[in-house]
Amino acid sequence: MNPILTQIKFLLFHKVFMWTLLIVNILGTIYGYYWYRFQLEITDPLFLIFVPDSPTASLFFSIALFGWLIGKNFKLIEALALITLVKYGLWAVVMNIWTDFVAGPIGFVGWMLVVSHFSMAIQALLYIPKYKFRWIHLLIAAIWTLHNDVIDYVFGQMPIYSRLSEYTQSIGYFTFWLSIACILIAINVIKLSPIEQTK
Image (cartoon, rainbow, N blue to C red; front, side):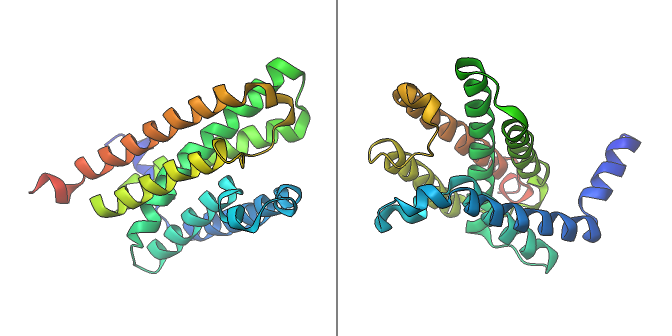
């Protein structure tokens, strides 16, 4: 293996780094829920669990990361973490850049969101060797993810991007196919896992 890749792998799986990453994700999750506070205030309680997409995704990853640190695999959480972290990480990147194009500069906060959400997606992919979820976990996570799309774009609970409101149908279409792409990533994780290959 390339010496640089070996060093990166050593860093990624070093417990000190993973504990630090866990703390960063927990803080990001808390801030994410705080970010959604105004939308949550006007949300029907029936839909509350489906509104704060990104912080819930980082919460899943935080739980999965904690599991790895204590030597456990929370398999359903891992499947949810991979699919939703990549999905909502990339989704937020696209929405913020789109806003910059159609409505003008998004400023420091907007670009901070681009960087932080892109990092969410990347970290989910970097830890692929840690995932141990199986087909049943993937199925449940896929249903959750696609059901969330229905809640967002059929029942109108999508994250509020007021400057993109006229593009809601296009965003919903993009989001559906982004969900499918992320589910396909998870399928490949299972197919390429050592357990699957020995069957």
